[in-house]
Image (tube, rainbow over all chains, first blue to last red; front, side):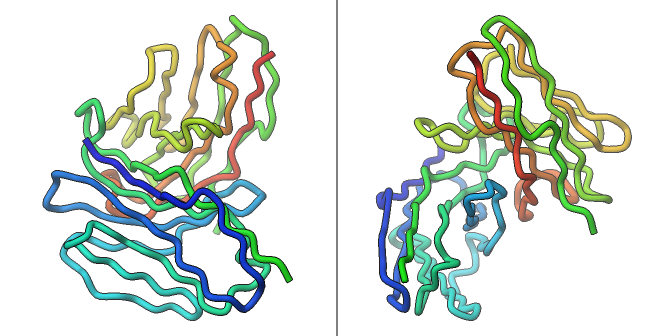
Length: 118
Length: 114
């Protein structure tokens, strides 16, 4: 079975602070993919990044950066100099075999609600 | 390029009724997946259709079903509605099946059961 844990339910920061969202995953698959999605109040999930299990390089995209460590089964997401527009729910997700072994699925964590105040 | 379109946006039903939700994927995308989002359970995978065939299925009862048409549009049906079915139902599309590619999500259909 697969599991994604986002221990932080809610985070509140003041604009321009850096914030890290944690994601820990469990899987028996040797090949898997990890994703981060952002869900603003409008409801639509927006894809942010994908990582496969063979690529542990960290990535930076503007104010966003991701730290993937297989040794600790973690895929953390950092926003540098946060802005009010970053306020949203952020989901970490893992692709792999479903709970019922009926094929593949995308397993989401419970999400971290980030509030950035001016 | 138009995104994923879900209709209707909001729906109110009563227990015991059935409901059909619709999803039009991004042009050229052949995989359509459905997810249920609730405050308690979070985002849960329902099923995926690719080339009019159900390819993958989550852990939901048989009351939840779906289908996909030759133009890749998909419908999801829930029969004998229960209060616990109140949720945001999200549809996502991708070019191919397998979940190794990013999913493109619609705005969702918010279903309320009275």
